Length: 179
Image 1 (cartoon, one colour):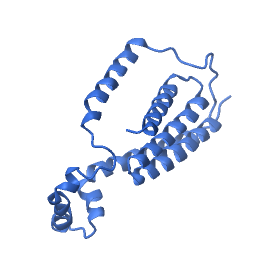
Image 2 (tube, rainbow, N blue to C red):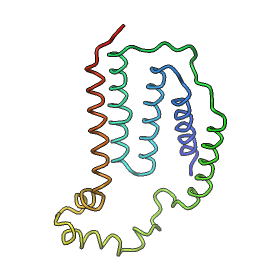
Image 3 (cartoon, rainbow, N blue to C red):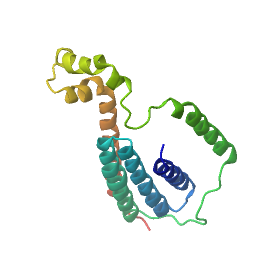
Image 4 (cartoon, rainbow, N blue to C red):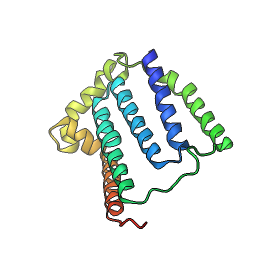
């Protein structure tokens, strides 16, 4: 990985930790927006522009805006301190898990942009989706077939999450402010 990727990973981890530790709701929302923007940049670096655009639009844009609107429409609790106390055993457990994932998973990943992955070197994988998509799904467009049929449960789950977030936001925004 390049120095940029390491710096970006450190930025993402720092904003994630700050999101957990800050007690002031406005600070948390701003840091969470920065986290989402960092994730969008990471997805772009990993050559997934569709995911990056979705993260930038939904994560950094719409979610941050809705959370700020929620604060504006409800009462903002006062905070005694700026940061939350760290639960040391929990932090050690999460840190050990992240370290384990980094030492086990990262060495197994292919470098970004390499053409020696099974998708490129084994033409049967790509050819299967091109030739068998219509017969297996009845959908002429291979990309639509992959999203709707092969990844149907994933797409349905994403739709449920977006719907639940929308309903929750509408419920919060219609709530009156009691001062």
